[in-house]
Length: 202
View 1: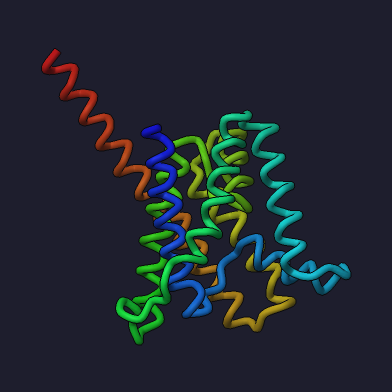
View 2 (view 1 turned 90 degrees about the vertical axis):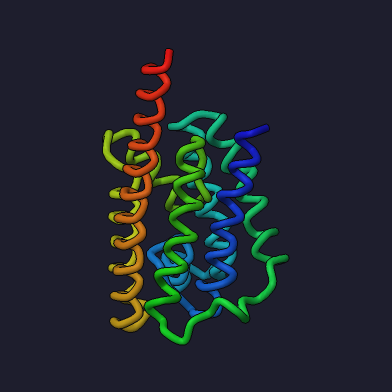
């Protein structure tokens, strides 16, 4: 139950990031949505259907390589996230007139939520799931895989977006990956210090 309370908290932070900053500021990231826009130019399917198909595919890959526990938690998050985004009110107070401030606040909320989910053997779906699988298989950091997969999508979406939008998406995605690594480092440092203190008192 504690794990699912934390999963809900992490999902809530991601929903806040999307509702309060990504949607009103039209922040583009290297994500499934960006890739869907590109694919919709090639295949005769609308963006929403492509996003659904790709998310189902990513979830299947996650279950295949990371187990049913991971899949069940991702399924819970994937149901909860759109619901929270829908019911959260519009951001009329904490929205800055400076796009860089808005991007920073978006990344802080998004990264905190992602790190909670990654720490609980889950993800918010989409490319985060693929990044988690690659991180486990290649024995590297999830933040690095988030950045690389996002940068690859951003590079491809130049065919759909203008150059400025694609470059901004690439920079936001890169910052997201770096912040995931920083959050994870701080978390693991805190955990190690806590375990050391417990052994000292034992």
